[in-house]
Length: 225
View 1: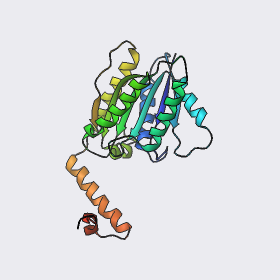
View 2: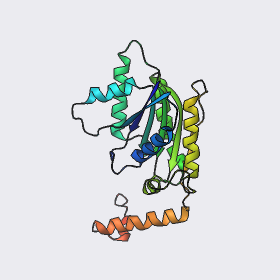
View 3: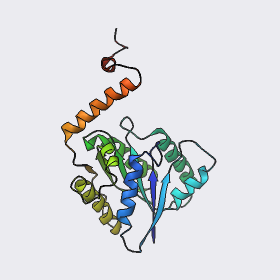
C-alpha cells in the first residue's frame, strides 16, 4: 500500500493558507480511491523549530508519495521550505539505501497567470533530480486567493472546473506507477480577470489607508534621485 504525505509548505500554516486548502481538497478528492493508497494527515512544515525536526524528516522519508503545496515567494519557494528540503537532503545523503519517493508539486500565487509559477516548479523538479526522488509533474495555480475564498464551493462547480481537471490528472497518474514523467499543468479558477485586477487595486489602497498612507504614497520611488 502506497502512503501519501501531504506537505503544506506555506509559512501561514493551517488556518489562513491557500496551500492548506488545496491539500485539503486534494486529499478529499483522492480519498475516493481504492485501498491501494494510505492517506496521511496534512503535514504543515514548522516555521520555527520546536525540537521535532527529526520527527518531521522521518515522516518525509517514510512516505511513498509527496504531494507538496506552497505559495510563490518572489518566483521561488518560501525560505523555511527551502530549509526543510535542505535538511531532508542532508539526511538522505547519509543513507546507503534511498527510498523511492514520487513527488507532485502544487504552487499557487496571486498572479492571474498560472505560468508565473513555472520557475518554482522547476526548482522542485531539480531538487528531486539531485536527491534521487521521482518527480512526476507539478500544477501551477493562478489566482490563489480567490481559490481560498471559494473553499465552500464544490470542485465540480463552474468556477473550479479547470482545477478539477488538474486534480483528476493527478489522480490518474497515481494509479499508473509506470507512466513516464509528464508536463506541468497550469490552471486557475474561472474568475473575470478585469474584476480580479480591480479588486486587487482597491485592496492595496485600503491597506495603505489602514496603515496611515495615502494612495499616492503607493507610487513613491524613494531610491530615485
